[in-house]
Amino acid sequence: MTILQPFKTEIDLKTGVFTPETGIIKRYLSQMRSMFADTDAVERILADEGDRLLYEVYVTKLPEEAGQILHCTTIIHPGKIGSEFHMTKGHYHARREEGEVYLGLSGDGCLVMQTQEGATDVQFMKPGTAAYVPPYWAHRTVNIGEAPFVFFAAWAGDAGHDYGTIERDGFRKLIVDAGGRVEVTDNPKYR
Ligand code: PAN
Ligand code: ZN
Image 1 (tube, rainbow, N blue to C red):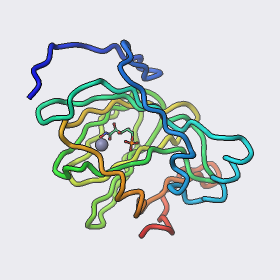
Image 2 (cartoon, protein in one colour):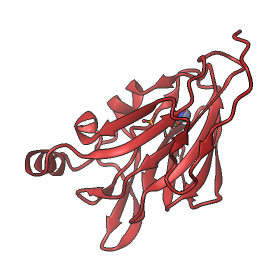
Image 3 (cartoon, rainbow, N blue to C red):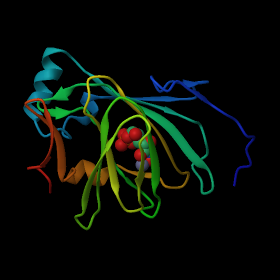
Image 4 (cartoon, rainbow, N blue to C red):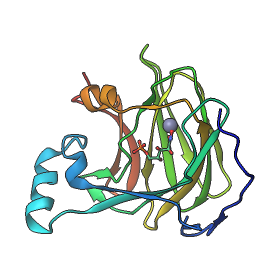
């Protein structure tokens, strides 16, 4: 495995910005067209206001190999698509036996999880919440507030990401705004 020099990163706890910046991933609505339940709302937004930046990920550049601990911050911007709050794509780890730890830094969010055996779980997160994603659980985060939801994550270098299963099946649970109340509902399109 790669032998590295120790290093550190300064993280702005409010914005999630990494210094030095070693990489940033930006996810737009157009890249998640079919992931929101209200696909009419998706197409309306794209036509009326153009593309929308949903979330950003500041990443450390590390080799994706066993023994390394990858880490990043995710910033989910506030907003909704129809009644569904802005969220990440979500994924299983390619190596299902790898878990992950999240730490809430700013804003309000929730962590939606499920297993391929049909179990579901939702953990609400605020600054200071350490949430654990055990092995075998797919995970997606959602911004349920009016400010950016920012959290830190750390996971095994060889975990890998399986986005395809979620792209195909979706999550069983949706997080929606029900007239000012955050509600967990069943996804009518779950396959
Ligand atoms: C996180 C996620 C990050 C973005 O670091 O990768 O929050 O979400 P998506 O990867 O689903 O777009 C993580 O779970 N890493 O394993
Ligand atoms: Zn993960």
